[in-house]
Length: 275
Image (tube, rainbow, N blue to C red; front, side, top):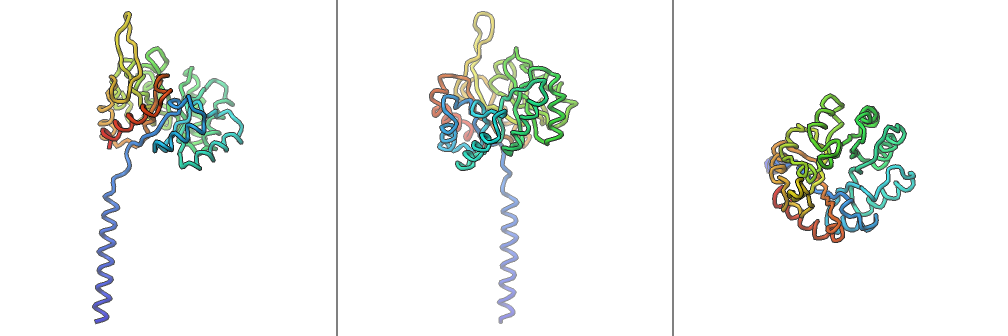
């Protein structure tokens, strides 16, 4: 009787273990996450920006005006501690200034390493800077994502950056600003797909583009209500199993004065269309 009971217990344990293992295997891997670019919170000081993010349940931060990578080590460590105290994760900073000054560029990577970041967002004003960035990427094993602004900027046409990156270290990639891609006249879903895995970060922004005085004028709007093909972008992200962060951002000074409404509506759009 004891023998039968013992085998019953063992068999039950084996079945439970198999069921647990199966359940774990069936848990979907996390997809794109929502974050916030603190440029959106530029009317707030550093501590206020952290409180805002924590209150609105957004833990992934791109530090912008609230972070100076050239600042003393002690200041960076204070900010790192403040983030940790609130359960927040600053996964990158930018758009960071770069130049042909090797020491200045190196400092970006040293600061990222100190903050335990694996990504830096930049927009080099000179193509020659890429040689230095590539060397630093290899030395520090920290990724670099190149940001785009409007069509008149160096990287306004996505083909320019794609050509610059194609023979570079694969840790050099793209920070895709969906609003500026749209303002430049491109479909953000197609641009994402054409970069073929080199998009490391996304600034989630929307703009309404209208013709005025012979040229297009782009105006920031609530996420999902402008001309950016965000639903198409989300579909491409699902197709490619992309797992990066989409950082909410707005260039609008009006929305920046009241970021709560902008962020609330953006979160709703994100969760309804990219579950």
